[in-house]
Amino acid sequence: MCGRYVSSTSADQIAAYFGAAEGETLLEPNYNVAPTRDVPVVLQVDEQRRLEAFHWGLVPSWAKDPKIGSRMINARADGVATKNSFRAPFKRRRCLIPVDGFYEWVSIKGREKKQPMYITRTDGEMFAFAGLWERWKGPQPDFPLHSCTIITGEPNEKMSTIHHRMPVMLAPGDWDLWLDPSFSDTDVLQQLLVPAPSEIITYHPVATTVNNARNKGIELTDPIGPADEIPVEATLL
Image 1 (cartoon, rainbow, N blue to C red):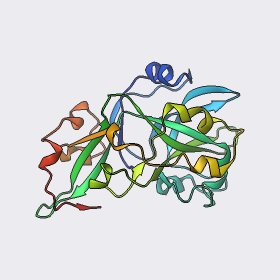
Image 2 (image 1 turned 30 degrees about the horizontal axis):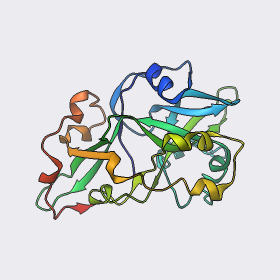
Image 3 (image 1 turned 180 degrees about the vertical axis):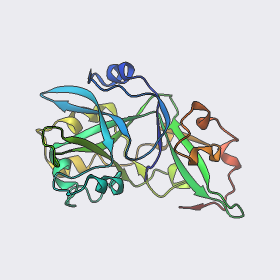
């Protein structure tokens, strides 16, 4: 799964990286983005990529209460084409979620607290997580809530040492197809939901101050030791 991540790149840099036009909403850098916060997303509207800020936690169009979104921060890759909450957006409302890095926790035998790990790209570039978005009208149809979810799938070999799932990371060559709302062949789209190569990711342990979502500073990503110091008897969550 993916429950916390870093969004520190400025809106203009994200827009330039993804070839997108900027929306009106600007977000402050956050090194500990938690569910239900507004997050940057890239989507395609009228054949143009746009950078917008959407609520993290998908709220289906049929939902009676937007609080359901807190249970839909992730969507399993093996269920997006069939599950009622994700089937429609998988066909027509796909997005990219720009991420600078993300956190996962491992349980260590002999330690009371789980150890947070910070995962980034080896080349320093942003991740482009595969996402879905939805529009919920609710009681005020003139002010719809736009929300999103991150698709997770099987881990690559490197990620499997710390977690049994990982976000789906799309390569630039797949962005056009993924964002195209006119393309709805779910069999083809499903083929994009595969683990990214192990060589593009690296990780290191960080302090447990990241456990508190009120902490948002850059120091949360500082290494407290090399990854190979994590005991081999670590058990996955």
